[in-house]
Length: 106
Image 1 (spheres, helix red, strand yellow):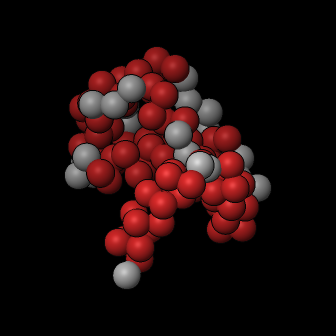
Image 2 (cartoon, helix red, strand yellow; image 1 turned 45 degrees about the horizontal axis):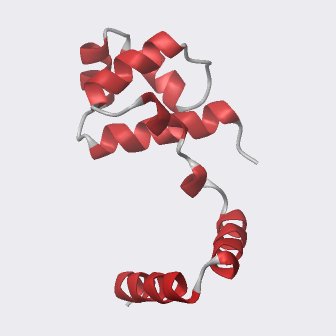
């Protein structure tokens, strides 16, 4: 199982990539060193809320976005969670999920 700092780092990298920023660009705009940002993305260091706030401002996301990393879980955990969610879904929700997945995975 991945550690909290590892998942946070992966999520930060994902958000940075989505924003089309290099580590150097994000670090400069957030007022931190690129070396430190790399360590955060690797999960090698703990990061303060103040630094997360600076990063969120540059990336245009909320602080909560850094902690939405469930999709980064190992495949087996994702499958188990999806099966659980599908088992709890109504018939209408299940049909909607089917249509979306069918369109995505064709």
